[in-house]
Image (cartoon, rainbow, N blue to C red; front, top):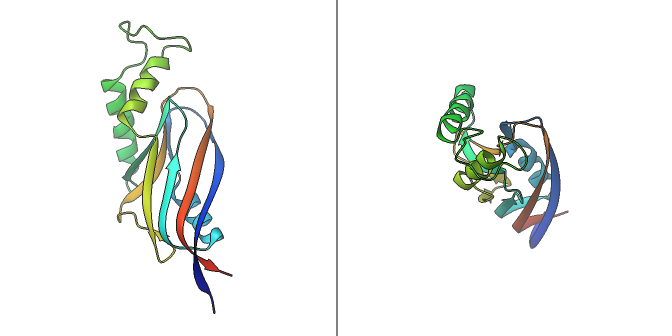
Length: 148
């Protein structure tokens, strides 16, 4: 018989991106929650970068991701001559603006050991740079874990 104990557990992930795209994270997060025995509480994710973001978004139709990428391209184009900051190339300032429009941290409830996402929701790292990047993601859980 297992009991539950209140715990705080955290880890850091390294995420390799291959350039501008959405990278799904909820399956990896669900596996980690299972690994630590999470039962109920809150999981927090924090992305300490200024040119990538986190979003909760539709996970069923890949056209949603393509439409989001197209929309951001129209809204915040790379290489706009009005940008002063272009130290790392034409996508530099655009990536910073896109990050402002997304999020750097999210909290998601956990119940019965699972993420309480909507039926069609997925958690994504939204890479705003054109080139491949190494991203770090802090992940923490606070709540009840099964004592094994």
